[in-house]
Amino acid sequence: MVIRIRGRALPHGEHVDLYADGDRWTTEPVGDAVLVAEGWLLPGLVDAHTHPGVEEFGQRFDDDMLRDHLERHVDAGVTAIRAPGLAGDPPDWFGTDPDTPRAWHAGPWLAQNGQFIDGWGRRVDHADLPSVAAAQAARSGWAKVVADWRAEDEVVPVSVLTATAEAVHAVGGRLAVHSQHAEGGAAAVEAGVDSIEHGTALDPDLLTRIAERGIALTPTLSLAQAGLHRMLQRPEADRNPARVAAARAHPGLVAAAAEAGVRLLAGTDSVPHGRIADEVRALAAAGVRPHDALAAASWDARAYLGLPGLVPGAPADAVVYAEDPRGDLDQLEHPIAVVLRGRPVRVRP
Ligand SMILES: [Zn+2]
View (cartoon, rainbow, N blue to C red):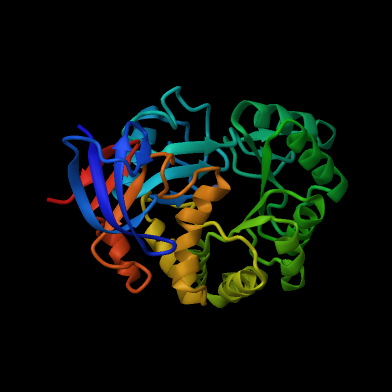
């Protein structure tokens, strides 16, 4: 079956009429094409920070759970994901299976000895970090390094992180870095990594430099706000004041990042899967323009991953809404149709 979608395509809102020729969009009419949906079209949503295949810290990677999580993403209109850290090697079908999103991943998290979540990731000595990260990036395109962990922990030294970024770039890969403390964030900026994950407690004075260096920020804002909510449920004596302060400052930091021209990527980092709409709303609530909050979860995130938008020759992904989601982000909860690899994988009756 050849499918057709038409309507107004974001980001620009122009009228388009597209046919899926296999996994490529074309404007050339194809005979017997079936119009599956009409409305406001996005080239699919992206969750740029998700760890499918596990649900609890330290849990072993599970293929059935992986498939279930990816299905939840598709339900939400997500046609591409980036997994900056996986609990195990993904199966061959990951990222290519016709019913699950396109996928980028960084293999296991790379962390310092004595840090990160027990049972997950690899612990790597500083001397080995560049070569281990480069080997991973050569396999999957990305490596993920945990630059800082608990407040009292040693941060990966700038020299080590710089050498790691250089080694990853030398094999044509990209480096994502976990940071939730100011010192780790500063090291990531200085090292010239490709994306900073979380970025809580980043020094706002670094935002201009982050933009200039082309470093993306995945603020996982909805996660941070859920964490803040949990922290505030505890008696005051049991709270970590620095963490509370950083979580409180995070929405303002994210809005300032957008203002400074930092490329934002929407990522949930959370279970249940398929909640990218929460992150888009959190970005908008923080003061990011709805257009830009959507960009971070759709066309701009796709561009960051190398996927063009709703243009002839682009991979045939789309999500269709009845109304312009920029005017009503709750539209994200109700896609009319989700097209993945030229197939209508979800169509609302
Ligand atoms: Zn994560």
